[in-house]
Length: 433
Image (tube, rainbow, N blue to C red):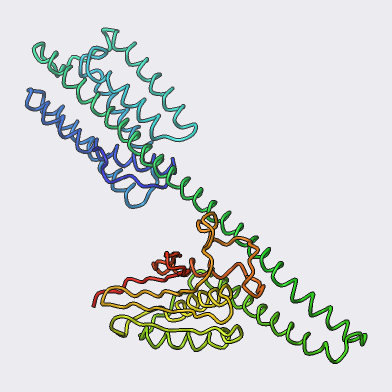
């Protein structure tokens, strides 16, 4: 209601005043001919009605110029100046201070407040009151009263009612236009404020994660780097003997393997945080992909004499998947299973596929994860975790898996069935063919 298609969300008061100025000119362009028709039907002098009708054209021209070229304040001053001149002339032709032209005082005041900017608004209000004061004074002096009278006694009351009605409606429309625009702009400002708060919250969250990531890296990299530096010093000073070399090399190998995993996960984390890094979707056979991942991790499992078993249920149909991201998740889930499974045990990778769902489960025997830790299992959080052979945890893997899964709309989670197996799963809804 009263929208006129003029409002935007800029929140700029100058722009609002400019647009209301256009509406003001458009309303008067329509209103003046309408009042002329009413005057004609009421039997007013035809010359009077014709002259009054001509004053619609400056407002029409002003509307078109403002709409196309701008110059709103200049055009508005010209329009209301012409209007003030016309009303001043009409004042003595319509019962002077008892006539309807006196009501237009409200129109000029409202127009000045809503549409003029800066000092022009105050100056124009003063001018309007000054002109009307002079006109009322002159109108009360009989020698200045015009002999040409457009009124008849019978029409005076009806004319007053019509004038009060259109003046009130005009003022109401202008006020409602301003209020409507203010409400929209206020709503827009609230939306902007909410967006800023959300952006700030996301920024703080990213900053916290960055700090946590740096803390994890500092913790995980310190041990192998310190050990390497210490070993090289001992070797340089000739303190270690030949028998100890094999043991040191074995320790360095394990530490370098851990260091490699830390760097790999860190790199993947940074890539997922980068904006615009879209997933590469490829046609993949889930059975073949699972077999490849089992073979890749089989060497690591063999270090603990573990057996990796692959089980597949359903139809191994080729589907379009984010191949690289699934490999990262499966690698991390298998790495955790190997780490927290005792030697000489079996780890089972189960794959379920039908036309609408694809699900991987990495199952390993062992103690369940504590209830208090399950809620934070996939968060980037510093934890002191050690595998069955005191393998160090990177603290990044599961958080990385969860981030990748969330970004792609997949479901990832942890279950502990009653049969004594820890189960991490990844489930994907397949697009309908």
